[in-house]
Image (tube, rainbow, N blue to C red; front, side, top):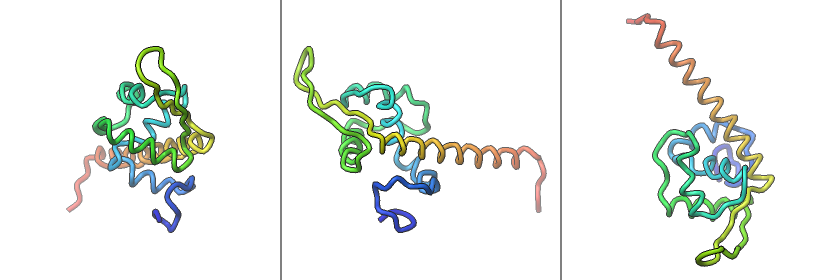
Length: 132
């Protein structure tokens, strides 16, 4: 069970969960969903393109990406199929699902909320007033 008694994998309306979990997860899930939104891709291509997504934190390692893709497929956020490659072995190609698109929207809302909270903090810091 996740926060608020909701099962992991549910599309949460409570964006607070995503605000708390984001940095600890290195933003793997929103990075992958964002990249798959534009076109299906295989794991290696997704890993190669991770730096295109401007989110904080270190880029995830290969193992973390494949674990995330497996979990996301189990949760119905992505689907996959095996495809023949022009050169080399067959590759598993991932595609975002409608559920994954909704989850990406939740991530965007959570990040928007975090930006607003941080902006408020910066405004408070810039007032120059010290309390004591």
